[in-house]
Each structure stands twice: as C-alpha cells, then as structure tokens.
Image (cartoon, rainbow over all chains, first blue to last red; front, side):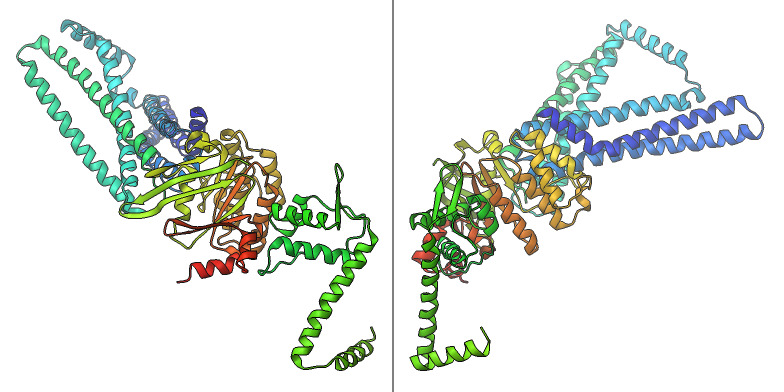
Length: 275
Length: 123
Length: 232
C-alpha cells in the first residue's frame, strides 16, 4: 500500500519537478556549449559567447533558486491539499493507516529535494562555471587530500567527517520537512478557524516550533560546551570537538524528527477534522 | 410500463393497483412473463424489497404465479382479467356516483347525461 | 439478516457544541435507509464517524461487524458531498486509483457506466462540469461491491435527469448482503427507494421506521411527516 501511495504522490508532482530540473540541466548544457565556443573561437564569436555564457549562468542560478522555492511550496501544498482538505475525504477513507499516508508524503518530499540537490550540483559542474573559475578536478582532489591530512593529524578520519556532514544534511532536511507537516497538522486540527485561518494558525504553529526548537538547540549546545570544559587553546581538540558537535546535532535533529512524526501521525489518527 | 406514485398510500399497494390495471386493460396478458424484481424496481424507481412485497401479494391473490426457475408470470387464468376489469369499473362507478350525489344529481339525471355524452362524442 | 451497521451510544463534540448526543442505531443488511434531518442535525457528522474520517468522543461503531478502522474501510464505500480527487487526475486514472486500493472494485463496471454517461475517460477532473464530476464519483463509489454504502447528499445541486440516474444506479447495485444509507434533505425524490428512514435532530435519533409503516399507520408520506416533525 505504501508503494502505491508513493506512486501516486510521485505522479502528481512529477509534472512540476521534472520540467524544473530539466530546465536547469538545459541551462547548464547551453552555458557549457557557450564556454566551448568561447574557447575555440575568436573575434565577434568570442565576445558573443562570453556574453551568452554569463547570461546563461545568471539564468541557471535564478532557476536553481526558483526550483528550490517551488519544490518547497509544492511539497507543502501537496501535503495540505491531499491530506487535510477535500482530497482528505478520499485519502482517509482508503483502507490504509494514516502512518502510511504520512510516510508516503515524507518519502516523496525527500526524494524531490534530494533529486533537486543532485541535479543542481551536477548542473553547476556541467555548466562549466567551476572550470571557468579555475576549479578543476585537480584542485578538488588536492583540497580533499589537504583536508584529510589535516583531519588525521587531529585524530579524526576526514572521510568519516564528510559522511557525517552528509548525514546531518539529510537528517536536518527530513526534520525540516517534518516540522512543516507537523505545523500544518496542528493548524488543521484545532477546533477553531475555517478555511484560510487554518493556514494562518499553521504558519503561527511553524514559527513557534521553529523558535522553540532553536532555543532547545542553543541550550543543549551551551550545556554541552560547559560540560566538556573545553580549552580552545588546544588545537588537537578542535576537530574532536567539532565531530562530537556533529554527532550531537545529528542526534538532536533525529529526536526532533521523531517528535514531529508522532505529532503529525497522532493528530491525523485522532483529531482529524475535515471541513 | 409507466409508473406513477403518489404520497398517500404505501408504495407496494400502489404497485399492486397499477399491475392490476395493466392486467385489466390487457397491457399484461395471461401467461406474459414479468421482468425480474430488480429490473422492475429499477424501472419504477422503487425499493426492490417494496417491489418484491407487491409481487408476492399479487401471487398470493392468484394474479401472478412463479415457476421456480423461469421467473414470474401473469396467471394463466383468463377470468382474472375480467374480474379485474369489473373491479376497476365498480371503483369508477362508485367514485362517479358519490361525486354526482354531492353535486345533487339523481340516478335518472346521471343516466341521461351519460347517454348524451356517449352519443355526442360518438364513442 | 446480520446488522450492517451498529452504533452504540455515540457522542461527538466540537468544542462546546454537542453534534451527536448519545446516539444508538442499528441497520440491517439488505436495506436502503434514509438518514433525514435538517442542516446541522448531525447527519453529516454521523456519516463521517461511520466512514472513519472523524473520531467519536464516546461510544463504538461497528460496520459489517468491524470496529471503524482499516478493516471497516475495506467494506464501506463512502460518497461525500465534496469533490475529492486531485483536479489534475484523468478519469481513467481515478479508476486505476480505486482498483489499486480497493479489492472489491470493478473497473469494467465503472468504465461501462461512464461510457453510458458519455464521459470521456481521458478528460481531467477539473475540466468536467460539476454534474459530471459528481457522477464520476458516484459511479466509482457504486462500482465497489461494498457491504455498506454511505451516500451523503448524493442528489444536492444536480438536475432531475441526473437524479434519476443516481437513483437507478443505487437500485441496480442493490444486493441483499449490503446496506445503503442515504443522507438527504430532498425527501420526496428519494422516498420511493427507501426501506426505512431515520429522523435525526440535534444529534439525536427521533424515529427509525419503515416507509410502509409510516404511510399506513400515520397515513402520510415521509415527506409530510418530516415537515411536521421538523417544523420551525
């Protein structure tokens, strides 16, 4: 059942996601083409291609920003419209637990965002912008080696560090999306407000949860720092310190994510009130 | 079959009356096969249980009979149609006479006007 | 005859307002029952509780012998008053959707009904007229071989020809092992099709009788009785 739900969520949103990402790749392709023309020509062609290259990079960056914003809006609206408004009459009468309904939205949201990120990184490389700015594979490799060497000196495995950052990114992404969904559920479960005011309450709920979660994070980190009795003068400890902070951040994000999951699911199971 | 229902009496009684009328007027002939309960219910836009009740009552009264695998039929009894026709006629007469009495006409007046109407409209 | 629906002492509150007040009702299978009451009487709340998109504060509901939950949703086919498909979906996709999630759904039945209504399966829901959209939803709901059909105001805002289609569809899909509950305030249209009626007012059941009994014992149609009982 979960697979079927995911299939329909993907179908509904791919009409937006695919063109957006395709456009980014196209911009990148064309800018790479311009770079190529620039390299092999001279005179007027050289100047024209340079101008077009700059223009295309500009459009590329705009479309990257647009894609991120549109994906976010789409994910939020899909959740709200499909589970909390009229379509909820269909979805919540399916012989499927609200847990599956929820995770279908989470899984597809993560897929969309990760796809966006991958496509964006790939397109930036494809566009020739790094090459144009003098960043080639050689530069990246040497930066990596320096980093790893430095990390090892301080007793930390550099690759592990990078992987932790990646995991933190994913967990934080999940937690942020879950936070949005939980705020929507809160806004749509309270017994007052009709229509647009439920959206307003959701926004307020989001702001409140955001503030509260930030406060908690700050408190936890300060406590940890105080407990660790840290001596900033000691160089070797810095890397160790930051990797501990990384792991702590991952744990905190994971706990928040679990809380948001539960809030959303419980509200849909017990306090569902479709208009 | 044209079904019309009003709000006054139970639907199953009205169904029975209309089927009787169809038998009396020859729309349904002795030995005719009836459509299934469900088909009749859909056509008349009434509850199937109601239709079933009406048909069972008519069976009980001997106007319909059901053969186990072949369904329901109008009874093969030719006097049924005649009896029904008489019943319906008596009902019309009763209503007519009561109305005439209310208007203050006598039996002779009624007969005179009936004959005149029959002649004028060359029936 | 088993009971297709059993509500025991149901209470539902919205904040301080009591929408359903200690209501108990039993409906047998093979019956078409009308749920009648004025706006705000609790009809829609009761139907939502049975459909499982609302939770009762007190009491229990059993549909087809199952407590309301995933198992009951497998055998309950619910037609709400609202349009409930993603507007961008094609009609053919909605058929696929139902057949993906409901084992008792017949795509063939749905397709042939839509064909007889001249509705293009490739049309997107948002391009259909309101009447056609409602017909699509009705066709899908009735193409399931469910044990309990819940129809919430199936004929509101629909032309007379469409109303005939709806009643005929309901009658054609009738079977002795299933129950149909129609919630409506357009009683005269629907009265001939009902076995029983339930009158509901202020969240309480006022009456649960067969149409025949009302007509013979009280000597009036359900429509007239309704006007009496619910006179302002």
